[in-house]
Image 1 (cartoon, helix red, strand yellow):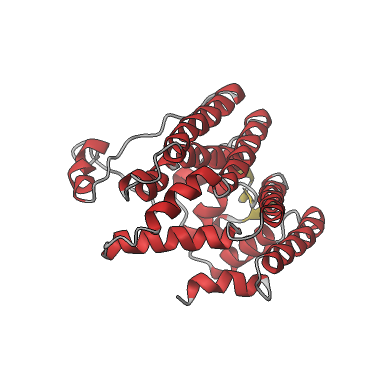
Image 2: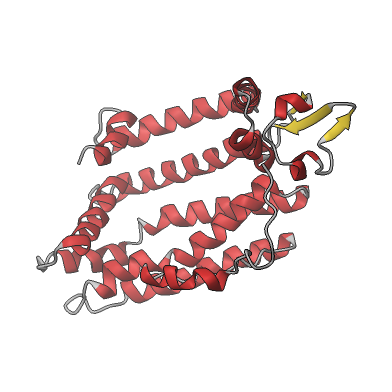
Length: 291
């Protein structure tokens, strides 16, 4: 279904700012990087800024730490880095330029390794722990955030001896890299799926007229590995058979490369869980679901 909106009906970001303000949020349009160097610089700059905030948390006088200077500061500092990583992820999965996708993949891996490393900043952990040890009288969302922060430190292995903690950190970094490799293998697996126009009933004409979609007389080729094409069909096609066919093909993408990757991931997950004192990765994952 295509929408034809008049100029009067079109909205701008400013139109939604009042609603965002009620949730203490600010809406902005993303500034997309246009070159591989810009992707790398954006990620590095965001991480450098976050590292500065981490340094400030860790450098505090432990007798004067507060909820705002520790837990809130830790919760806030990752925003810019996460924002840069989210943009890199979209570029990695959708950009038509291989060099851009490769740069974005490297940026995502850089972010993931850094994000894991945050848990092992002992100076930051000591500051948060010092505040926790004051047994603060906080309630509601603040209490929940503090409990979950300390829980996540425990689940990262901060209560383990230094050598075991370092091993868990390295295993987690390896696991995050494999996860990115797994996703990249899917995106890089070309998977053209041909449909007749009747199969794509419900799709907007703008999609059917997109470059590369119509490839013959009543032949429309959808790339199952191209995220925006896949999502458009899954969200709009009236035919369940069409949606199922495309879904099954996408879920099978990169299987020849990804089976070995998945086996490595399963082995690493098991090692991490055992090192942390859990019976299995399932136990590790479900702990936070049943609390």
